[in-house]
Image (cartoon, rainbow, N blue to C red; front, side):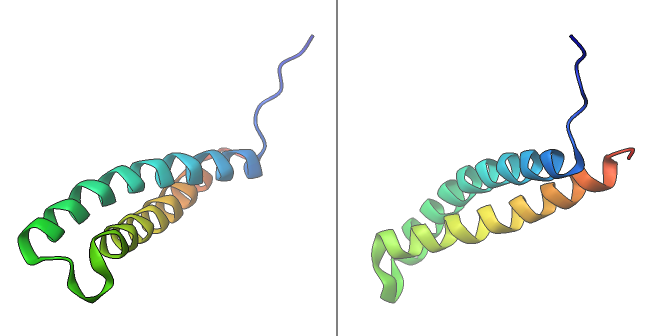
Length: 74
């Protein structure tokens, strides 16, 4: 039974998932700090926190996906 290497698309997905997970965690931490320091703003606690988490997850997911593709040797 031969083991095949993950395809370029598999590496892209894996990088996006890892970056999205890291971004969610970082967004949770920084969003919580911002809500404590500056208040919830006009979107409320969960809206502000969710927006921070989503933007961090999107940024890190894109960054890690591009990085995983660039590092691939195909």
